[in-house]
Length: 292
Image (cartoon, rainbow, N blue to C red):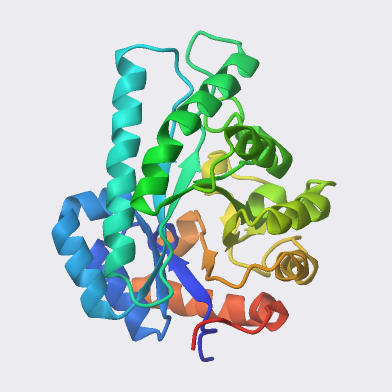
């Protein structure tokens, strides 16, 4: 099966690959775009990572991740915000190195409730303050801070932002064009307001990414590893993708899967399986691609 031109392999799907291995496997399987993670980029070095990406001819669909800025004011928070500034610079560098159609999108995972606290409202407020502080710098760098609401089961330890409505409300209050959202199927499929909020995000021009993977139960003991390739679970990709199409999103679509069985496969096999699953369950519902 030929890969759909809008398919992007998020590097988490082949987590144990180095940056070189991830790029090579993506190219060999004919995929045209890749989403990167900061740890492999740091290991290779930013300049070398940008060179490898430029030489590959791949588009760059996103950089993961920034955020984790819900702690109270103090040295730890200042260090977290400075790390987000480095992530903004990395995103701009990698987007410039990617092929035409690359996206300067930095995925933002909010962070959880600080240890020893029960103040969920305060944690959300501190996240908003962090985004407001970073947004002007992101805008100046041409980077979008892409808020990723996570499924509520992660609210305590990973993301106090749980719905698209919360993310869009935050973006509206900050009021910067440098703040967007990602529609991630794993995190929004259950939300009864998903259709309305995806349409709202489209009207507000805030959809910066569409990520897909599937939900299946029972969940494993480590719920971080509970994602599956499209088609292996209960998500209605026809309906969800139609909503994203109707909202006007025409960019790359990332497959981001955290799954121990997929990670145990060879990198080429995992990418090939991703191409097949995407082709059978997602790409037939996509609007006409913007990339040739």
